[in-house]
Length: 481
Image (cartoon, rainbow, N blue to C red; front, side, top):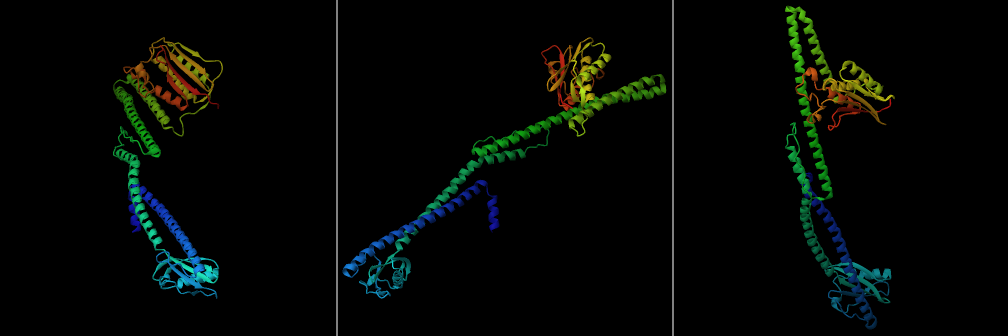
């Protein structure tokens, strides 16, 4: 039974449980206050009754001293007993009136004995047979004479019962109002939590497995206090984070789809060329032997081109995956000397493009992978030659700062259209869509260059579009070996 009640209590709503808990706490408080008030009232009324007994006994004592008799009853149902204790044993005198004594005087006699033993006044509360609860007081009125007075406590008990009844009714109504009103206030205060729960249920109904899935829902309703507002802010921040993560995931999936599609498209051409040249080689071997070397050379060229493309794709994949075994092999290198070597190779391969190199006489020590950074420099220089007319000047400038070193590759060619500048580093993206793949490459050069530079902790950027030149600047951190 208790277990069932506990399960039922746990299944109720938080507001109801808080209201019941508040009611239970109020019930304990009401019980403590009621008990203290009742005890105080009973003690107060008892003290008043003791004072009345004292005043009555004082008057009776004077009457006994002066007249030798009692004055008579002062209050209804009050009792008086006069004892002669001259020989140490209380002996009851004949009462002045028949109503002065109760039917059983044993309790009054015991009070007289207690007074003799104590030598001072005695106060007791006794339940007289057939009479009810009485307050008894015994004192010596003159040597050898003890007066015992008794006052009924019915009025005190009646007053206490009335007080308890009033307290029970008042505290019961207050407790009911506290639970009902408190439940309503708690419900209004916890309503924002219910709104957040509805928002969470709404999110659960969304299909988040789709690539374009987003979370447009937010807990927008206000109220509930500072704590609820803090929870709402944290809840909405979490939703913003999830929504942003979903957007990033969707964008990554879109990039992956485009990458796979572009890679398939780029590989299709050399594969078809390899197949075609293989067929031609087979045909020439049987019919035109003199053409075999020509077709074999083209077959090897297409295979080599496809190998370069696959190497670039593999390098990008390894850089994206941030493999433990990084494809970089950094070592202490003089960046100035590396730029000079790249410039010499460019002059030998592209004599139709005058090249100017601005490098200081001092070495520029940088910790990097010389093969990969040379690959980046060769790519930037090759792009400057391929995408500009013959005779276009090309310049390479090395600048050194306290914590970085930069290499700028600039040409005076036609530049890059504004619409294409934001995508020049995208994979498989070509500025001139009409260029042949033999001339324009696969569109991976700048993507590989950016990935390699970022793997070194550096940056590569395209210069300002407001100038007449095209400038790519790569910046590498200067790290000591």
